[in-house]
Length: 317
Image 1 (cartoon, rainbow, N blue to C red):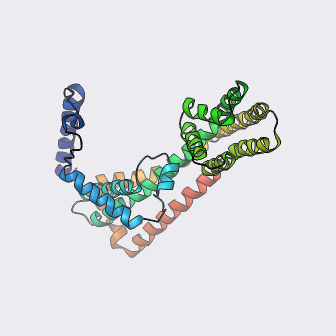
Image 2: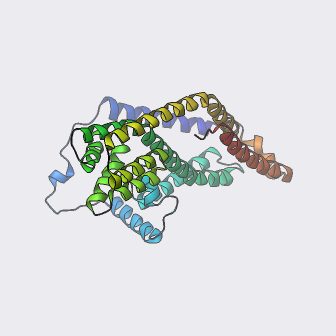
Image 3: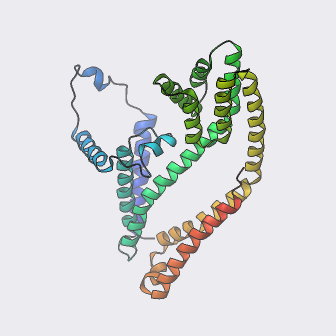
């Protein structure tokens, strides 16, 4: 192994131990916050804070009116409580750090620049995967919480509360993301939006067919009348049975999904491991035209195979 890499690894390990000792084992004594030590209305921002504010303002000006992959709507669906400009600034910072890491890994070889470009591309790709994954997890959690939510609404209606008061109680007594979505429904209703429209928009935003049934049942009940608590109980019972089947399907397909993840990660891990231990092993792939073509085909086949495996083990219910 290269002595330089070994030295860098030892230095990083010593720094990690120093951080653990100073900040974990012997934390600093609590201090009075800066806001309490400053006079009212006084703002003494550091140079880094000012630079960050200017950068985020420039990003906001450049992306104003656009709702791309990292727009406010997408971040809100993923439950990421950040402004799009701040999130994009984090992606740029992560890309710079990854480029530096790639340069250190492949320093002095032909792979330095290509590997740095690949690592830079990993930052937006990873951010996109994070947003999609968090959005999917948030919607799935909302669906699993729905039967308990309907039982709570039904109990509130039986106790004599109005429908809006029962929804407001759900927004305070349930966990996220149900509490967040129902709080939004209550706020939109107070601002003048019709309750049925607010519930339908929530069902569309969460892509929940079960909650769409609830919104339609509430809309029909508001027009035709009837015992809404019994209707919600019946809908909750149906949703509970659907969630039970959904959990069973997820358990039965867990082995296939795990196998797919391992088969995708394994060649990538072996590639980077050999690149770290034997940098000259892959030089023919860049110096020989046949090697370049083989590398391109390998990447294409890996992407196609990954999509194929995920579609195979995915069970849509």
